[in-house]
Image (cartoon, rainbow, N blue to C red; front, top):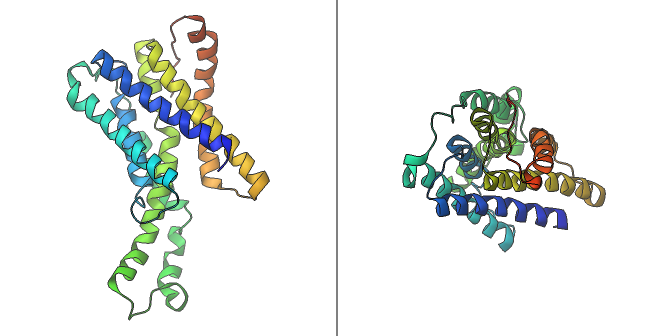
Length: 246
């Protein structure tokens, strides 16, 4: 693990904590897109299905639990605890415009198989399929592996566009609270640091994850306009407004 990865995780965690503190202190979720937060909760849920089955490190496990808890608590506070302050009139982004193409792309492009390879997977029993006398648990793990891979890929693709409802909401209201812009800044910084992490790993470990890198680049592009406005307006004490994101 390198410094870029650690700083990226810290930035991501700080963004989530800032959002939770903002909602809790103000007793209001006005200006926060519940749809974006629901998408992020879905991202973590589908990405961390291996939480109790695949131990990588204590750090990895703790961060997974924290991200899951933070995302669930945020959704709870928006849709239940402080639902009266939720601005549903401006949180109107059509989620099907994101979920449908992301789901389709997850099946078409992932690290487990493509639809054209399904027949090969079912026919190569000698090489890839569990033996008939293996336990049912082994059979279950094998049969679920492609599904887990697809859901992991789904989470990567979905994360790259999950912020769009929030940006769309800001464009409709015309401005964002300062604390909300800080949240968005650290969220974008996390993704930029992860790009640096992948570049570092490519040069030091010869590691390259095409799906994660391409999705990360797309996600960072969505933040570019925001970064410019954050530096030129928010840091100078002015209110931030965004053009239509889509």
